[in-house]
Image 1 (tube, protein in one colour):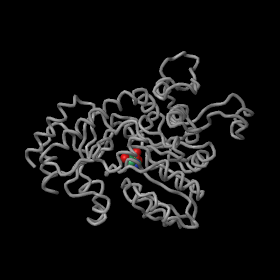
Image 2: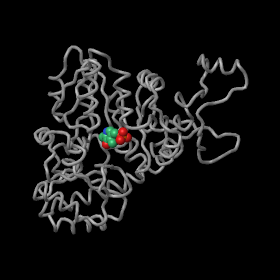
Image 3: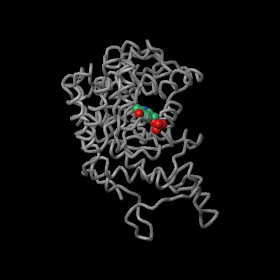
Image 4: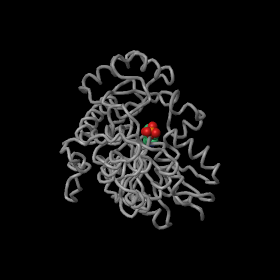
Length: 393
Ligand SMILES: *Cc1c(COP(=O)(O)O)cnc(C)c1O
């Protein structure tokens, strides 16, 4: 079904879908097919000559993948979109398609672990230099610009520190210098924040997280102008980080409930953050919509709600964090986030264990830091479990 511009994003997430087949199905069917058949030699010639759009082979296009890409692009207010096998495939594909040897990228120091590996280990192999900056200071970004700077890359809120980067300020500064801006919008989702509305060029998602929302499948997406997305598409169709139609079908259906789910995730997270802020065994709570958050004003400007992630530092450092985690009865210990179930993780010993202690502290990852992905359980049950586990800290 074609997008109606006046629809609210919540309606688009429910209503946008591929055209009905002759069967008249209501829900989108699943196209588990690697290739598509043609009636005549002329038909397949014209398809391969790209004289008009037709599916030919699922590494190129597939109706389920296309439905998901179009839906995410519509939610992000982008002209075009493409989806791939994982968030990391989206990030790597974007770098490979839009950067070349001799280019320079500026990135926020606080960044997803996998993205850090790509930037520091693999981009230099292709002759692409990087500079990390203290993300919350817009003037630091400008100072890091060199003659060959091609891209500015960041997340907001950042993982796991939940720092907020001023989308409007960074994008305005980048435009003055003709630099592309790319934002990983995974933590906020297009329900809470649409970076393109603030002038950002490309928006990336790990759809594995809130978009699937139930911890089942992996996917990644890239949204932006037709021109930029076409570059990413051409790179991906040649190199094959292809999204499974099954995963696309799952996530597209999940997007129908993204808006309602986020409403509950955010309400639960705010209550948990407020309760933790008063708790005697907690040193520090970080949540974008707490007034104590250092970038609270910016968060209020660019996000419609604080998101589902809360970070806090427990008394007792490493030992305190481990005692807290080991005494939880309901919350799950796993490294995923954005699930219907509440999840705790300990960045120091898991996602960020490869950094040195000094590097961790420079991005605010203290030994006692816990990252909590607040689920859809009844909020008092989440709080009860946290409170009883904190007694053991
Ligand atoms: C999980 C995550 C990624 C990577 O996504 P995958 O789907 O696991 O490849 C990238 N960025 C952020 C912020 C993430 O949380």
